Length: 610
Image (cartoon, rainbow, N blue to C red):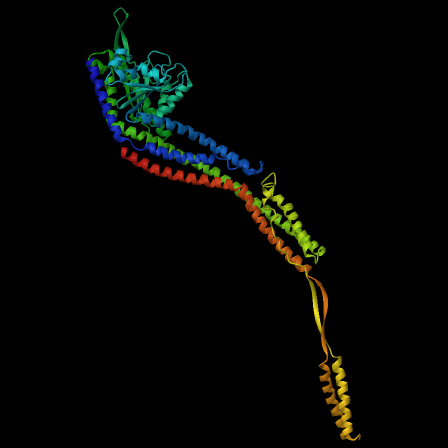
């Protein structure tokens, strides 16, 4: 038994050293994940919020149905994210618990010998006794990560108490369970093609957290088609992989043909034949993957195939027998992995998983959301253009109606400014509500909230009526004429007296001259006593000017009020959608920036790993 313990001790020392190496090799992938998931969650929260949930926008409005479809479409993506995030969180917690060790995930069908093989790694025994368990150094700590409770009620306390994998039961591993040794975490998965669908799903979920995957296949039928299909799926995920053919042993028969309890390894020829067959199938799968998925860096070309018998190694005390069991090759591989590849695998795996998620979200999901949002933007733009078109028609009809109404009221209430203004205000409100109702009904089924911009507080300033008249001034000259007559008589008479009354030419001339002078002097004296007056002529009123100015004023008022109403309605019914779009675009932009920064950082770290 000493050789076996020596080899196992060497393996344990290797993993103990690896534990120390891991403590210095951890990178900040958890921080990157948190930053990315925070930015992703911000996009999801913004995109899933219905901007019209509290809106009174009419239920049959095309924008409402389009946004409902958009939110539903995005919600499907978000649900996928949430599932991936949930898995990522599980894997992150898994890594946090076992981040200082090489995480080995054991895959395989039911009855592939996973439990026996795991016990051998933990204790050097396929089915350890209580004595073996108590004497083990180092002592493995067994755990159960998640259970389906389909075929057995294994819980954390029971697992910690039994401190081994149960061997020989149907569907023994019905949960993610394993053990920890310094530098090594060994996880025994639910069997593939097991009797419970959930068991297989658990294995698919948790294999993504592993640093190394061991695929176990029993020597009774290694490399079956179903096994190869699962290996191909693992190859697509770019996992470090080794195939272990278990149970490569047999019993001897005596000369009489009786089966005797002497265990022997299968012949080297048979074992090599099985290993070569599986290796060839791995190469074929690698070529298929390279052809169908050229962008995938498959690890299948590097996969190792081992043929072992843990049972034979356990029962053989000779070093040569330990070597024949195949376990020495497997132990050396594990030590090589831990010493040479373990650190790189441990660091690369979470980074590669995160990078793959980043690429998928950026290239597929964000582009899809942006397409959905652009369609919503186009719908909103169309709705606004439709409102602009309707408002132009409304303003045109209001202009026509107001023109006729104003002319009628100007004729009816000419020169009665108070009555004219009161009726103009009343009719303007009537016309306003009549035509804007056609606009409002595009938004709301009821006019309650939309009529907040009525005209109760509008001060309509109108020109006032006034009569058109002309004033003509006149001068009264009757005194002037009287003075001229009197002056002529007085001066004319004086001339005759001076000439002695003789009708000579001299006398006649003097008389004429004296008469003229008397006329002028009398006219001047009479004019002094004349007076002025004026006459006012009625030319009509200014009702036409009042009608024109009132029409200009009210049409300008209508344009102003209509624009204010459109802005109010847009703010009330469309602004929430516009803000929703802007918020999503902003969150997406920030997420893209975060993704770009993380991709640069991740690529830099991976390039260092080679």
